[in-house]
Image (cartoon, rainbow, N blue to C red; front, side, top):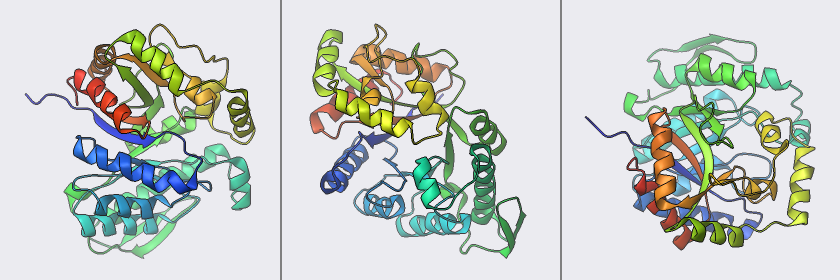
Length: 326
């Protein structure tokens, strides 16, 4: 029987320096390619320095096996355009990609783009986007589609995408609308690492960071040196919270502290605007055991926040290897 394996997509910690963005992404992407990661997560949004489809091409051209996880938001493109990009990357590189389907961006950005759909309606649109895109990629015949947001009449994508290169779709979100669409479309459902680590773990995907060392106390001390508390950084998060309707961000923000829990759960990197997710801090052995337990409960896919530093990435690899799932 084949041993279960975690698919891990690293993402660089939040980067506010446009001059370093591409270099950090490529450093992580090439490290990931050499060390058995599935690919790399590429963000989308008005404030992202390089469009993720362009970055995906850059990454795939510079790696041998990487399958990037590309964020896709319907506010920026039509399903046919996204399908064309998927098909183009498959033809150029003979590799599949993964698609992180999102609806969120800053409220001010939505207003700037003239998108006035409600939170619930954006998820209805997202479900239609996934449905039409799948048909375009898989159908040998022209596609007809009739939805609230998208219509297609005898629309065909050529050439037809081989089954082994079909993308896999992920949906992140804590809202009822997000969970409903993930279920209806059969997408991999993502959630943030919960504070008690495994309560309500009923999804196959999770988003968190790892900070690891040989010993528990060494890891905790090093993590506090790397991610320092700062009132100015906390204020940045407060400002972004005033400009979002994201349910998962509000769940993380509400009533949480920056204390490093006994179980290794740490929200400080998120609260200080240095990461977009909680962190798991501990020894290689501790983190490996937790990952193995998560996998036993159905976890298959991890979006993993990583510091773009060779030494730190090696520490993460040791923790992943200790799980026996990577």
